[in-house]
Image 1: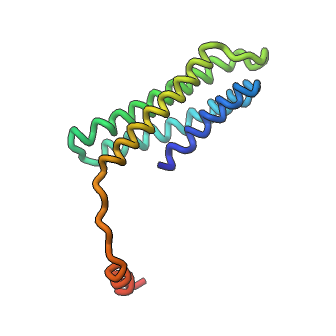
Image 2: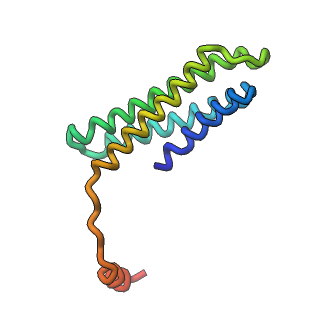
Length: 140
């Protein structure tokens, strides 16, 4: 859950910076997004490879890995498209289009995560007395 907060925040910051007329800030937000998205994509891939999942459980996780990889590619393209025009102070159409695509990819990834949370079986509730006994019996 927390791993999605930083990339989403950087994408939203870039979108707000573009909307407020600050293409330089948007460029740096997208530039910061590149290593963050790479780390999140590698982490998601590691989770998929590490855990043996059934095909029904693996499909949404693989989709999430693909979304993170696509977000990384879009961030690289958007930052690269903005770099030559920083001195002129305008935003190329390719950069705007890829930023919108980043937002769409994050929305898709969020919906997939929501579906996974809904599908997850509920954990059985532990009565308070049993929890207190188990904690009291532990030696620290």
